[in-house]
Length: 161
Image (cartoon, rainbow, N blue to C red):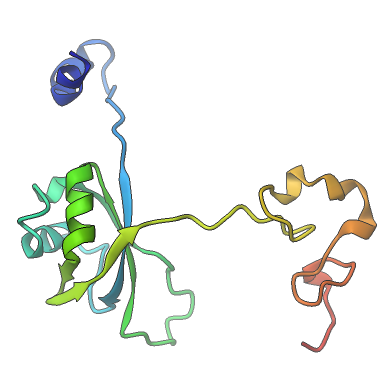
């Protein structure tokens, strides 16, 4: 019965509270070597991805988000290809894109699940925690520079390398 309720969630959930929705699990993928001529923020971007991958994606609405993995900060740096993040609601569509690659602007692009980078502390340079939760914060001698590993903050580094 729970699956049936989720399947028809849009029809009944609004009866409880207006503007309420059922949150669905999303599947975040990364497509590599996507031509940078493709604009994921363009109005027809989701439709273009859908049309090129109709056998795998049910509709343009199945694509919840499209964006570059790394937005370009310096527009003067020209790249021919980059990595595109694709967020889907449907697990079968996600698996299909991974198995068959996917097409963007006539280019077949390898697809994989997005694996976020590990949490990194910019105070001690350790992993698994952030600076605000770093136990080394209490000991100024524990601070580590990311550039030279000296006992100073990275922003204060004066090393030539």
